[in-house]
Every structure is written in structure tokens, then in C-alpha cells.
Amino acid sequence: ARDETDLDIHYRQLMALGRSKKVRVQGILIQEFVKGKELILGIKKDPTFGQAIMLGLGGIYAEVFKDVSFRVCPITEHDADSMIHELKSKDLLFGVRGERPANIHLLKTAMINLSRLALKYDIEELDINPFILNDRTGKAVDVRIVLVDGAIKGHPVKMEQLSLAFSPSRPRKKRPHRKNELQTVSKFLGIEL
Image 1: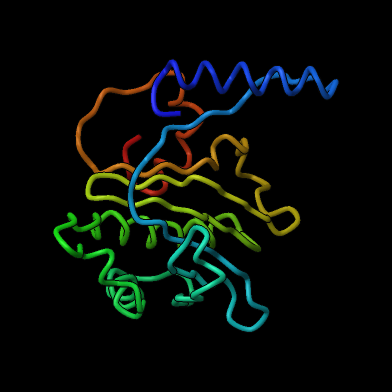
Image 2: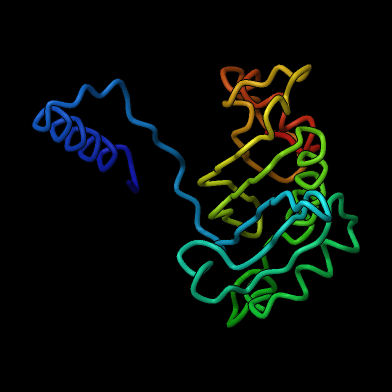
């Protein structure tokens, strides 16, 4: 949906579809539309090396081009920079044909902190696809997390707290209704939501 009118139309259509199929719809999840480059960020626990982080071209192109880079967690800024420069599609991030470059500093910060998060919560698998990155912000649009059994004992975390959204470090108006939901992840990743 591009505006509130469009959103209202789509909402009514989805609710009508639910009623026609006799499905009890308790609500509809919406999220902000963000333009930018679609990346994939991932974590995979390897039996030999432990958790490894992945960066690649994401969205619908993730499985087509298989343009990815891996490192063992945790990574440093140098590792994150190397991973970005290993991508065949890296030029898209630095701006082509007059496009503004993506916020590379934000991407590196998110990658470093995600690699630490993987170790802190003993994450078996994590996929953020797409992670949409533009010149100002980065947003995790779809996130899938598999934790090792008992991985978050001693770390009371609600699934809402594992919803990831990335914004540049700058003062901005707080959203009190989301503060508690995202407090753990945003604090850990070192970014302000």
C-alpha cells in the first residue's frame, strides 16, 4: 500500500477474503514500505566451525545468483568490509548510474552485531531476507530464527524482541509502544529504533 486509502482498500479486501473462506482473522500485520537494495543476512551453525554469518544479494535473487560471502562469528569491521567487497553485486551498494550509495557503515554495524547476537543466543539458523538497505536506513522485512534447544535460558526474550529493524545512530522521536518490544535486540545491536 502506498498511502492510507490504499491500505484501507487492501485491509478490507483481505478481511472479506477471510470471511469468504470462513477463516477467523484476528488481525493483519502491516509494515512500512521501504525502497532500497535487497540483501540477505544469515547465520548458520556449522558442526566444525560454530556459527557463521552470511551476507549476499537478497530478495528474489538470493537463490538465483548465489552471490554470498561467509565468515565465522564473531566478525570485526574489517571482516564485514571484506565480505561486502567479495560480493559480485557490491557496486549496487556503492551507487550506480546516479543512485545514492547505501549506508555501508550501518550495514557493517548490523553485520558485526548480528554475529555477536548469534553467539549470545546460540542461534542454529537465522535468515533475514530481504534486509532492505538504502542511504539512510536498513529494515529487516522477513526474519526466520531457529534457536538451539534451551538456547535462551537465562535470557527471557519474547519473539517480538527478535524483530529486527535498523536505523542510523541519530536522535529521533521514540515510539513508546515499541520500546519494550525491541529493547533487547536494539540495545544489543547498538542502534536506535
